[in-house]
Length: 218
Image (cartoon, rainbow, N blue to C red; front, side, top):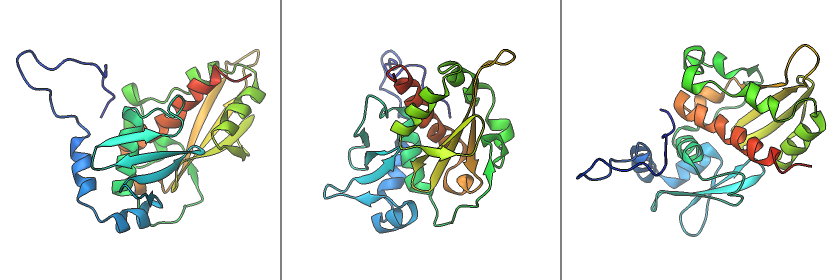
């Protein structure tokens, strides 16, 4: 699954808009018992029947009836393709399993070596370029996303994408030999909660949030 090239893409001339690729996910979610969903995912439900998920220190709501994902911080945690696919996918697939306590790169999850390349390659170099040698700025941005220090790289931070899906970012400062870069790590249990396409979408949620905040950090 890849992100659509344009959210405003036109339907074929003379025809009806094609079904969104996310539509089957919503159908499956509506068919599930909310009590089972909340037990597995650690989400909550509100009085309107929406699922509430903590995401990057903020909140996101998933409404199976209207097929809408809304964010308490939309200018940073956008309710876009990545958030929709990963949030709905997480509610569908999360399991009651503990953290493995072993950190792996996305390429090290089952079948991840082939998946996380090409259109699914994670933008570690581009993200690092936003910060150059400014590790304090990196720390500030990640702290605003609910991050906490972790013993990684020059500066490491751990954030929570979803309740059972922690995510680590390691920042390597630019120096005379190498440009800045960011590396990404997951708990080995991540593949128990999301299939690969939804896991990629989930990782792109903090990547996008960091990009948006980086231009606002002082």
